[in-house]
Length: 450
Image 1 (cartoon, helix red, strand yellow):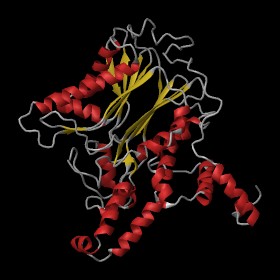
Image 2 (cartoon, rainbow, N blue to C red):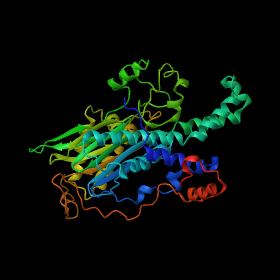
Image 3 (cartoon, helix red, strand yellow):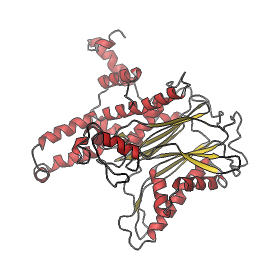
Image 4 (cartoon, rainbow, N blue to C red):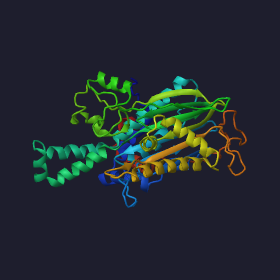
């Protein structure tokens, strides 16, 4: 197991920010909704024009056909932060109990991978170590951002200590309601599947059950699908063995929630990690059973056989499995994408049309049932990155033959990066408080020479 090692520049920055800009409760609640109120700094980065994203919000099915969502859309994606002509980053994040962890992961992983950390890294192991460290650093920073909510929860638990659940509801109904809200907020987490292209090599890192599929085409035109990610759930024998070594016994394919989720790895979800002993199925573990350490693949040479890459949330492949009963869902998805490449004019069109077709198949299958019961579909995200698959209907322009394109289909003609990227963190308050603290002599000793 890889042990997290803090990057020195990150630890200093976050320590300083914590000292000077410790948010109030109201500020923190506002920041937890930054996906709606505050634009992401990654919005200033150019989008890879050889990629596209399709998505669909979750749905509960009704016989009258009325659209009803179970919850707001909780997934996020990224494609692609480019700070030079040879580095591309793509990601799909499937959140649960809110989108905050997914949005945090988008911004955090982009910051940990695109701001010079890969400079001078050429060996596969070096790049994979940067990827792994990026996941662990984002995990650490996200969980630390919840400290104020953890403190609130601890305080409320002390008020109800020693009371049964029914007594808590009768005596402290408002406290119980606050605890339920905090528990939901502290359960916010996300899967993550990230693809990094640097030079002519591909690297993939993932936690959870979102997938990365690479389509390779041989000289005879036969398409082959390679799954580059690992599903971290109870269908994974390696994960079952890892949990067994921690003192937990599960069977392969067992239908069981792991605390408040189904995945054995994720980013975020403070409650199931720091408080795993509160869950009956996890309380015998010798240490935290749900981890954020990613599975890594690469470097994979992006030669002429690599046609396109897919990053997708589990809502896509599970919906297709339910709708058709297929036992080769990865292959079926690849074939659907291939068909759309032949008729769509944009990569966005390819991605969205595949999503729409899967949604329709799933919807029609359930609507034809005599009893819908609690039939529903999850959020879906599909990110397509074209390397060199032909698009004959792309407005008379083959998007794989732009100028300055390598033999592997990697386009190096993206718009020049902006000269100034909007700051991920606004440091104006920091500088103001720094000067005040410097004048009144309350600076920490480590900062007095600045």
